[in-house]
Length: 262
Image 1 (cartoon, rainbow, N blue to C red):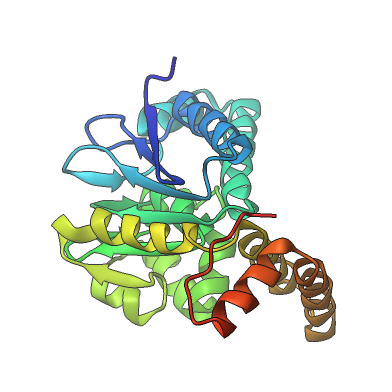
Image 2 (image 1 turned 180 degrees about the vertical axis):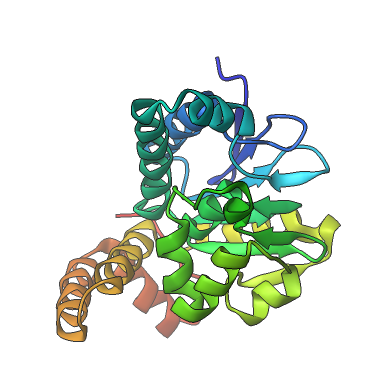
């Protein structure tokens, strides 16, 4: 039974809550529980979209558990440090590589490992009072769960260097300007907006959603011809599906499509 991660599933949408009071800090147990939850939801045919949010009112995720980091630094245990880095990177890679869309509902402070988790998600909805940042430099360390890599890819290397090297936090509105988040919503509306977007996606055919996710991911770190080849492959696959036939027929008949995910 999980202590820090809980989830519910309703109408094809799973809501995962990181609930580790007071600020939902990520420690090895939390990361392992999150990884297990992701495995269960990925394998669940009744789940088409996953939303991740933080429990409580203070934070989405305020970073890694500094007690764990402090113990590693104090003992200079390089093996423990490497294990922690590999664990966090592995979980966040699992999010990024998921064929089911993962939406971050950022309902409070989103710092350090919290921002690294958010950047692994495919869509990000942020509360208007949330603050985001990679403050690790202030502790004499650097981001280790993908922050140096994903932030530069999202906001550009110069802005990423500024944020990582200063440790400065930014507002939700600034994050929106940097395209770090997709949408800013009033704090009380974050989950409603995230669930609404998730429901909209869940109403689409699962084969097309998976194909689109696969094509997008294939092209991110490839040249354009390679990306286009991946797109052609996925397009060919969905064109032979029952959902494609239903979608086109429904459009021509001016009715709502009823996808069977086949």
